[in-house]
Amino acid sequence: MMRSQVELSTMLFVLMSSLMAAFCSAKNKKQPDNKPVSSCPSCNGGQTGMWTYMTSVPGPPGLPGRDGAKGDLGSPGKTGTQGSRGADGKKGAKGEPGIKGSAGQKGERGDKGDSGTPQLASHMNWKECAWRKGDDKDSGLIYNCDFVKKYPDTCLHVYYAGNIGIFNCALCCSRWYFSFNGAECSSPGTIDGAFFMRTRGNHNRHRHRHIEGHCNNIQKGKVRVGFWVGKCVTGHKVADAYIGWHSMNRIFIEEVPKAQQ
Image (cartoon, rainbow, N blue to C red; front, side, top):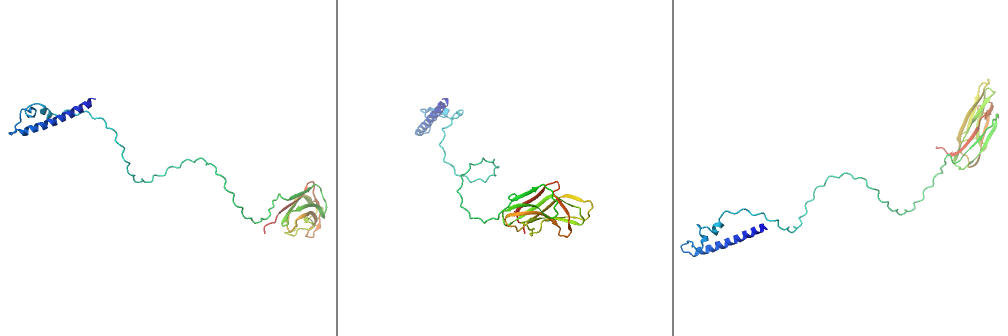
């Protein structure tokens, strides 16, 4: 409130001073000798009055005015130039798995593949014949074990496991062998084992023996696998033979793929 009154008084003073100066100037122009008249005492340089007051030392500055009203919003500036590319940020944490997508359309049926060759695992077709009986036969069939072969292009894997011995002879020999439907194997060869003794002495050896092999070119169907004893191919006389001494005899038969060429 005080600031407004000061501003108003200052404005009135300036206005009156301007009017008084104009009036004095007009009076002085009417005098021929350019002397001031007493009718404008305040215009005389030597007298005190309003003019003297006007030319006195300025008063102290007034109080600062209040902030003006906020101006209108300026127009937007021009787009600045594009800044340089910043450095790559650190790799973020792995996000959560997304929602599973819907199943795609069923594809077209593929072409028929070539026919494969039959595969035969060892557990598919096999047999074991076992018996507990001693046999002192020197020549002839000991045991038959029948087997059904499923495929024409496979082979048979056979073995005998048991106790075999000879005694009471010198320069004698006994041979044990397999037959297939009454004939020995020809491909790849016979499946046999020989036991030879040079001197008679008091030898009566009974040992566990293992005779094993494969036979090709056997037709599918029923196959009679026989185990025999007889004369050795060396021409030595037949020994006093014996098998199955207080133990089990086993014939094992298995149908397997042919060997690689």
